[in-house]
Image 1: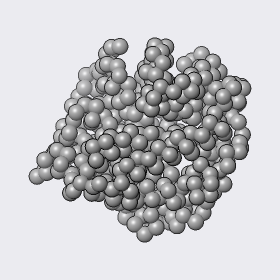
Image 2 (image 1 turned 180 degrees about the horizontal axis):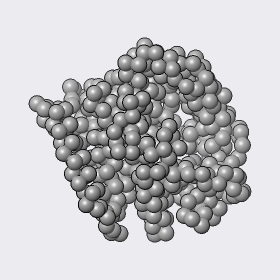
Image 3 (image 1 turned 90 degrees about the horizontal axis):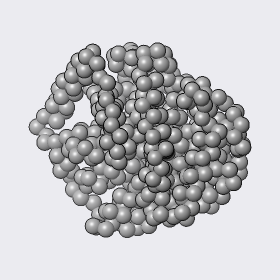
Amino acid sequence: MTGSRGVNRREALLAAAMAASSAKVRARETAGDPDDRNALCDASNEKLAGRSLHQLRDDYRAELFDRALPFWDRHGIDHERGGFMCALDYDGAAVHTDKFHWYQGRGIWVYSFLHNHFGEDGRFLEIAEKARDFWLRFGRREDGWWSERLSRTGEVVQPFRGDVYSAFTTAEGLQEYAWAAGDDESRRLAFVLVKSAYRRVTRDDYHDMYAPQPGWRVQGIWIYLLNCCTQMLARWNDDELAGIADECVSAIMDRHYNPDIGLNNEFLNHDFSRPPSEANKCLVGHSIQALWHVIDEALRRGDDGLYALAARRIRRHLDVGWDHVYGGLCEWVNVNEFDHQWGPQRLGDQTIDLKLTGEYNYVKSFWAINETLIATLQVFEQSGCDWSARYFSLAQDAADHTFSRASLGQASYVLATDRKREFVPRSVRQDNYHPLRRLMRNLLVLRRLAAVG
């Protein structure tokens, strides 16, 4: 599949300016330190999280196949009609049976990924196929977008209201399913979705659902875009997607990165300048997620310099954002703003006013721990760094003892809590993507590490 990047003269000049800026920033950060993977390393490690690689591999396998997947099989998968119902209490009881758009595409990806990477179990592909068929039958609109929420039987509960992120989740699921099933229609639709969503979110009048102001750039968009592009380009050549991937990497590494604080800003003006109110703010887990997606793209390209820079910045965000007193990763930091008033916080799909004041917003989110575990194990596999092993171990401890409910005999997770990990909100949703993605990806890494350990 081929196409044109369609870059006009103005865009070409902007790209050249961004590339020059990128070269200056990277040269300054890497001066005197060769851009190779060994430069990041202090020593190799044979244990992680207090366990041998073989023990950790076995623990990951047990958590994935003996607890997490059976939980979803019993409670969250509509085996009759197809699709995923994620409004679940800790014991799996349904809060409601609606099917939200994000969880359908993500579920299709999870079960297609299981089929592609953990043996061709026909049940995995059947679950993905039923969900795909349900969503394509009931979710699509004539204008090319998708309803945001359906009932269990397919009636529209919430029409499309501009949630473009859902298009990326569906594209990711469809491209993985296309590879599993050899389905050209799913592959074609995935390409159409990514490209049409990209055109929409880069318009100057686009108002991102998470942005405080119309036209603002949101780092999360580049995360979703790059996640799709890297996976698709690893399987199919496409010039337009390659150009989008270039833009994503530049946005994450050059534009959203603020050298004054050494952290990534979540929000920028449309021209990539920094709104004064946002210049010192960093959504820490999102930045770590963005950077490990850049590492995935760097590994796909064989770009050691890009890998090394992204790895160093992951460490920087962890050094700044990790709560070394109580454990876990902070949600936000607003550098030097010691009297900052943080607004009401969302904890596990519930909005609760914690009345937080200060430089740090110490809400602890499980999705951010999952992203930290992927990022640090990814770096550890490539480089064997002590710092990546240390933060992996800290994050694994948080996953096991703060967020997992295994000690209570449940296969579910707490999705968010407060700084001291004392407040546990009622569960109105379980996550069918971030924990499963972490378990699957990291299990593959641990298998490779254990095989050579």
